[in-house]
Amino acid sequence: MSDARMVLVGATGLVGRTLIARSAADRPGFRLAALARRRIDLPRGARMEMFVSEPAFWAETIAALKPEIVINALGTTWKKSGKSEEAFRAVDHDLVIAVGRAAKEAGTRHFIHISSAGASRMSRHLYLRVKGETEEDLARLRFNRLDILRPGLLRGRRLDDTRPAEALMQAASPLSDIFLQGQYRRYRSISADRLVDTIYGLARERAGGRFIHEHDALLRAARRHLGSGPINLTFEV
Image (cartoon, rainbow, N blue to C red; front, side, top):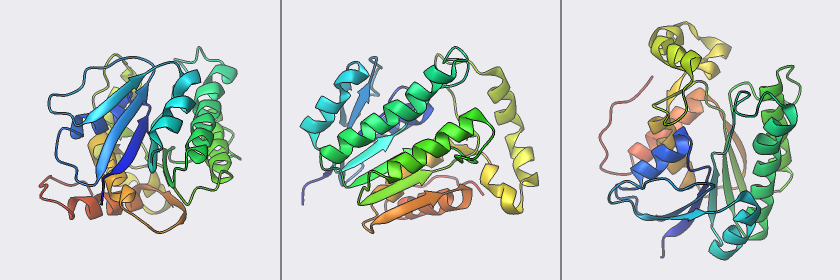
């Protein structure tokens, strides 16, 4: 059986770069390609293709690649959007849905979307409200399988993207996570590297349906991936 074609959209962010860096390791069963607006250096030994173009052309690339699995790691911040609701929504909702439609039309069976803990269409917080709207609109596309990942604070080193407040929260996360118990566990931090393990674990799932994964479910999926190969890494709890 040939390897499944996996396309990553949003290659220049923390999760995208981490997934690409991990592509240098042996990942049997997947052929990775990435779409991005700008070129980035690929790690030595990376087994993948990179397609650089404006988002207006991404649908054409997705149609040509006909991926079985699409991973959406697109996202911006309030600051990067110029503190404009329209500009923020254009990336975190409109562009994501455009990618989803292109994937559906290309015959993609499995869409993996990185959202956020607390995402809800009913939220008073713009960021979480838009994330919730995007989740619901992706569900309306009716992929054979839709995995929605809702991580809390993402830990990892961002390149060309200084976020002092986030850096402070990352430093404090080992302590603050201890106090997030019960219903608040969903807000615990997770490393980008562990989230990539989650993505690989979910990409192997064959059951259809819509699945929402919060903190504990993200770790369970990551464990399934780590148990499928000869990888020996420390694990988060």
